[in-house]
Length: 157
Image 1 (cartoon, rainbow, N blue to C red):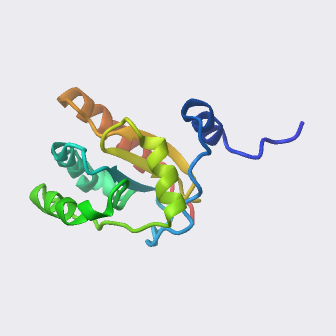
Image 2 (image 1 turned 90 degrees about the vertical axis):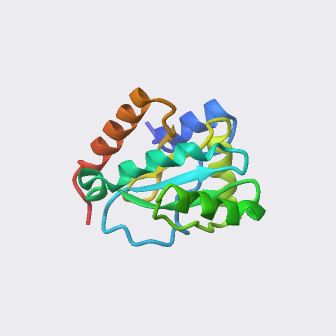
């Protein structure tokens, strides 16, 4: 039986969102040391209060196995100065990333309607998880547990 040309997450994304799955993050700027990569996806209209949850990436058990590479702004580059101010206000140390338009647009389509979201890429830089930032204390616990599980996976060199 022939193998599908796209991964299961890509097929799910195409089915659920009516779009092609995001391109592999080939234009990603960081060396991750064999670790998965998380990026934050924001829109100008998103509530910046959710940025406080990104402190979870600083926990040693997460930081050792999962890289928070940065934040991308979809739908409005003119809002970048405001986004930088918001990141500073919440003590989030993460660069604002400028990805190829096709990558940014496909990630924007995938995360539409989620509010601020996290997209996690595996070691081969293929999309593996999309989740909104938490909206409650219980959500923050689940968010942190999910990141911890991803970070605990063995590294690939």
